[in-house]
Image 1: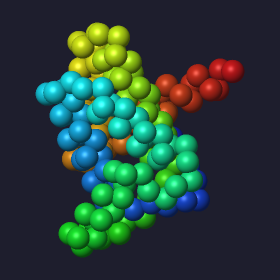
Image 2: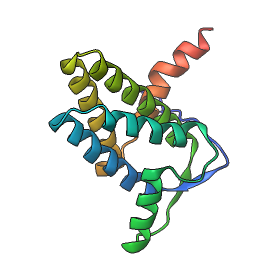
Image 3: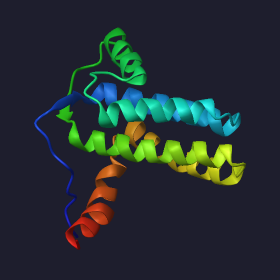
Image 4: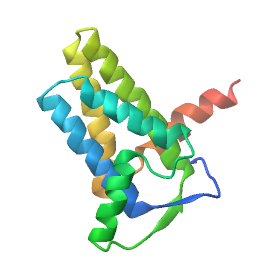
Length: 147
C-alpha cells in the first residue's frame, strides 16, 4: 500500500483549534442542510478563503475556535499547516459549489455537496482523520506528476 503524502511547510498551527474549527463547519453545514439559505455557504466560503489564501492569522471560525480552545484549556498541539491549507482550499471549492447549486435552484445537488463537506469536516473534528491527505495523495499528485 502506498504511503500518504501531504503537502508540508515550516509553519505550524494548533491541532485543537483546527478540530474545533472543523466542528463549526459541521454545525454550519448541518444548519444549511436543515435550512438551505445561501448566506451559510457564502459565510463558509469567505472563512475558507481567509484560511486558504490570506496571511491573516485567524478567520472568523478560527478566532472562535481559538477562544474556545483557551476557555476549555485544551493542550496546544503544533501540527503542520500545509495540509490544513490544502483542506481549506477544498472546503472553499465545496462551499462555492453549494452556493452555486443553491443560487441556480438545484437543491438536491447543494444538499449532496453539503453532505460531503459535513463528512470531511466530521472526520477531521471527530476522529482526527485528514481526508485532504488522501485526496492530495491519490488525486492531486497523480495529475500533477503527469504534466
